[in-house]
Image (cartoon, rainbow over all chains, first blue to last red; front, side):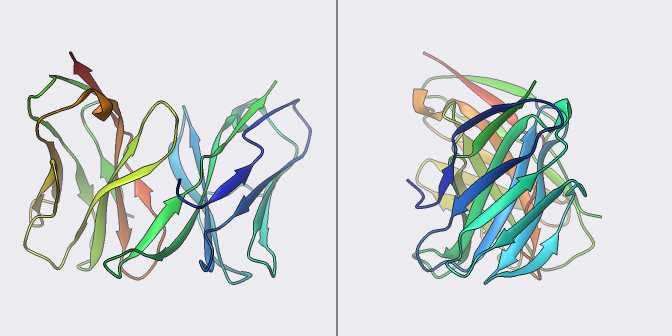
Length: 115
Length: 114
């Protein structure tokens, strides 16, 4: 168990709909990252937040948005869903490992299926 | 732009044998980090081993070790004494020292034959 939690585990919805994925980082971690894993695109970085502020953006579509709240949990909002948005969405938080090195710890992922 | 390439979509090895997974990357940076992650059927992403580019010594973690060739931009993973629990997808990942975004390879599926 990485200490990062994601809800829901599975989500099935229809094209055109909007969904919200939730992530709670490990206790004490200020950074949250979102990644998408799809059959077509593989694993790709979407966005990073640090202590409530957007820190970096990757290949995130304009239909997607995210935020990090004062309690440090994060939400990824996906709207106008398309079939191609079906994927496993990972959240990770970063902190120091036992050797003092910055390390990303991954949640179990949310599997999204768009029908 | 940085890229990570894993040229072996699938590898198989006999239990207790040794297997090497390949990874090459492209970057103009001098300071960066490389990682191998394991993704078993549960889909959980688990860090296996990491290498700092400024370190010449290859990283080792129990049965897992890397062969880091900075000039060749190569970062292979060696798994010794393969076990059934090692069966998984293995992803090579890169990140610059100046940011924390991970750039991923396409993955290698490792099959362990009993």
